Image (cartoon, rainbow, N blue to C red; front, side):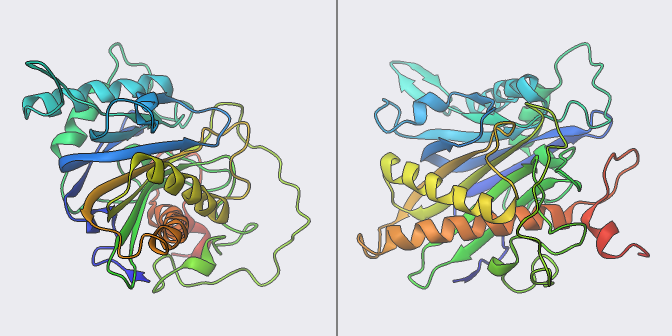
Length: 332
C-alpha cells in the first residue's frame, strides 16, 4: 500500500468534500458529495451516537444509493445541517425518484462541541446554512485540521480536528477516510507527541516520531469529558464495487482503526460511528482476497486520518486545549 496522490479521501475519483465553519460559533460542517449517487452503509459502536437517516443504510432497506453524507458539530442542533445539504442537492435536481418527485438522501452524524468556548447564543439554528455552504464548497482539495466539522473539536488532552488520508492497494483499488476527532480518549501516548497510530504511518505524514519509547500498559485512564460530550465520526470510502452488506462489513472493520488511534475508544460516553461508501467504479480484482485486503486498508487509513487531523490542528484565540504542535515544539 502507498499514499494516494493528495492523501485525501478525494483521491477516490468522483468524490468531493466541502467545509464550512463559523469562527465565533467555533463549530462547522463537512460534506462528502459525489458526481453521482453512491452506495453506503454505517456501523455504530459508541454509546452516545447522534445521527440522521442512518436506518436507510441497512442492507435490507429500499434505498440502494445516496446523494451525500455530512459530518457536523453542534450536537443534535447540527443534524439540521442536513437540511442545507438537501437544499443544495435539490437545486441540482438530485434525489431518490418517487414518481415525479425527487427526495435527496443525505444521512449524517454529529459531534458534541457545545462547551468548547464558542458563542452558542444564537437566535436561529446556524447549521442549515453551514450545511449548504459546505455542500456548495465541495471539491477535490480541502483543508484538514481546524476546519469544517472539526473546527471546534477536542480530545481528552489535545485539540481535535478534521482528518483525512488515502491509500492505493497493489491491485489498484483506492481506499480513503474522512474523520472528525472529538474523542474522550487520547490520540497521543501520555503527555508526549507520539501518536498511538504510529505503526501505520506512511511517509512521515504526522511527524514521523514513531511510538513513545516507554508506554505504560497498566495505565488506567479516567474520563475528562462528561456523558454525551465526546464522539469520533468517520467515513471510509473505496472505488471498489461493494454491496451494502459488504460495505457494512467494511465499516465494521474500519472501527479497528479508531481503536488503534484513540485510547480508549468506543466508550459509553462516545458516539463513535463509521460510514462506508463505494463509488463502484472498479470491479473487485479478486472476490475472495480483495474484501480481506479492503478491511485491513480501511482500518489502517482511518487510524492515519485520525492522527493527521490532530497533527494538522492549529491554535486559535480562546482555545481550551493545546494543539499537537504546542506539545511537540513548545518553543515554536
